[in-house]
Image 1 (cartoon, rainbow, N blue to C red):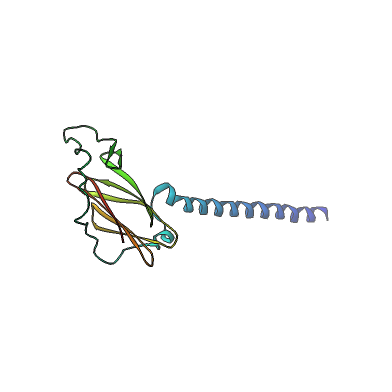
Image 2 (cartoon, rainbow, N blue to C red):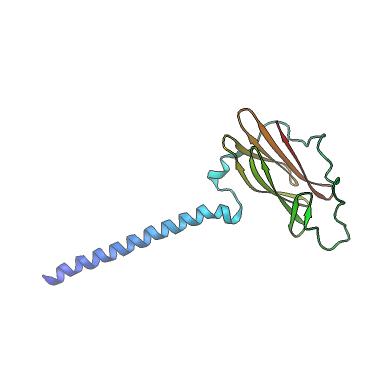
Amino acid sequence: MASMSAKPAWLRSLAATVAWGGVTAVAAVGSWLGMSTVLTGDPSPAAAATVVTPDGDTSPSEKSSNPRSRDDPPDEGSSSPRDEWNGWSAVGDGAYERAFDTDGGTAVVRLLPGEAVFVSASPAEGYTARREWPSDEHLVVTFHATDSKVTIDTMWRDDQPYADVSET
């Protein structure tokens, strides 16, 4: 009879170990999926739900300042880009990245010749974030609230990164 009671204890031990392993595996996969957005910069489907294409005209404002007003553009004959260009930081391979901190929230954009890359958007309380690519090298991030709108219009223009931020 002693052998019969030892078998159920062994099975209970095995069942507990298998259950622990299953819960640990689910937790590890869930953590990885949750962190993958942070690690890769790609929004998860849940995060993408708050970032949708805005309605309305997103063309750059004619009243925006000239991006060349502070410095001359990088030399085309130069083998390396500038470390910083009008608030944009060089991140390698001819790419520039910039964080925009506005009343509507913070957005990070990376620009390089021929491509505008959405990195992240964190809306302020009461705002929602939206993004739109009018073309491959043009990205517009908009923060909307009930009574205000902040538009960050970025593009690769005249062989350099460019941005126009407007608040209404």
